Amino acid sequence: MRIVDLNAVTWRKSSYSNQDGGACVEVSDDFAAIVPVRDSKYPDGPVVTFAAHGWSSFVSALCEGELSA
Image (cartoon, rainbow, N blue to C red; front, side, top):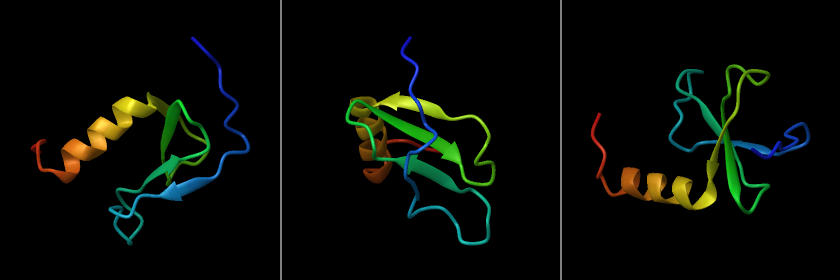
């Protein structure tokens, strides 16, 4: 397992996050191989990292309606 320093990353809120403060997902594009993801309500909380290709596949599947609730 590789440890990544996330103290200085730039976070951006998902365009699909709602505006009332709930369901807010933030991601960082600062790394080529991984995509860190966190809950914007808890910026000091846990961060989940995904392999960039896995995250891209996940987002594509969401956008194409391949995943159901």
